[in-house]
Length: 594
Image 1 (cartoon, rainbow, N blue to C red):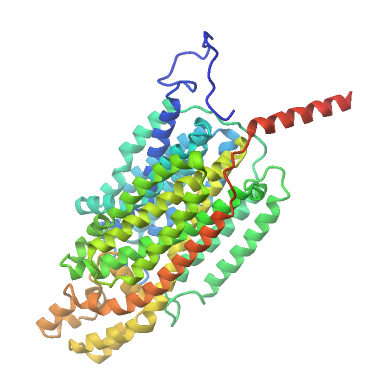
Image 2: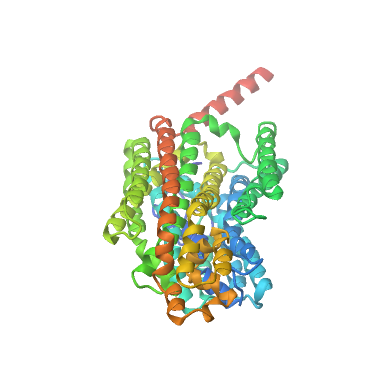
């Protein structure tokens, strides 16, 4: 069954007491859309809410995230949720196909809400408190994966093919808009209290859980089969190894600015790749694979997911680079305190969300009629053009030019995301929609995780060429002793990047432990810790890094656009024809047995 059934006129109901909306109620599809949009919005807001809130969280648990040995706590607080979501969405989507998408989705609300309560009650401080938060974020990621893996499948079941683009467009708008809204919400709440960052999800989770259990119904075709244990294990091990290796690859190792030469990082990357190759082989042999490789024979599915992966990498990298740009350079130069830059960075990025909110539903609706290829490919090219635009404006830009580029970038992302998701989900058989939804979400989440490693590495490599000399010259000019200047300039650029990213005063964070600020003239100390010294110091090297980063992002968008063009014309899988063929085949077998 792929759509809500329409009862025969005058038929009698025998299902017991009527809920608020039965599955065959004409408004049920809107109930499904509203609830799944709320679930996905909550999950994606929490994927980014800690990005802005990290300084408040670490102040709350009395831990310096830039202190010796603490960078791992910082990265895992940031990455734990993303890694778990990327690893589990396929398995949870497959379980949804087997046992019911609504059942798994509803359980996701419960798990997510419990995790939010536990996070807000963190009873300890220091490294132990950080570990509590990391484990809580991982548990949140499990709930978020349940929500994301099954939401699009529930919508695809509830809406006819002629309306799915609009419905999935709204759902996708909430998914990606949530990642940007999380920046603003996190900034506002962290100004109040760090625990509020986690408490905010509790009432939403309770309301969504009750509403989901009362209103959502199983419409999809269940396909029990067997749980693919070897596939689940190899997939989890392979993806986790690669994403963990990337997390540690951007940290310094030995005398290197990054850790890509670390034996553990290399083992994770190479070993994870080998395990994933084994996973692909296993999936072609087992009777009930979790990751149905046969779906990649569907051109609309394979092309759409490849384009989605590249778009997710580019979008995630852009988000982090723009935050560093605003918090480390532009906002301090325009008079904003470092402590308040996380909040204002979220506010100044609003045009991006507005553009997405406008284009997503509109293009999703239009793709129902005209197909996804033109909208998705055009949106990717527009997004790529804005990356070039970011390269052409000065580091200390006119905000309205920057805002216009953000808005157009959001429009391009909206043009791509909703039609692309609709085309992917329309192309698969009804009984594999849960798995397909999980596979699509895996590419989306993996792209975001990969973007951190790829774009941070590119930026750090760019900074490493010019920032140390600029740092040394600038410090010496302010009467910092040569030994201290050499020591600070020789530190890996990742420290300066994360200081700016967290809304810390970078020079104060770097020089404070040396005691130098108390020994040099007060005027020089004031200049060093002021709002202009570090931004001017970083501007040149940062722009060199931006050229590398956004050139790579623009190239990804062009490749993704080519892949999107290759998806073919509009295609909707004909489940009725497939069922008829299976029935005829079964009948032929029965006749032959007679």
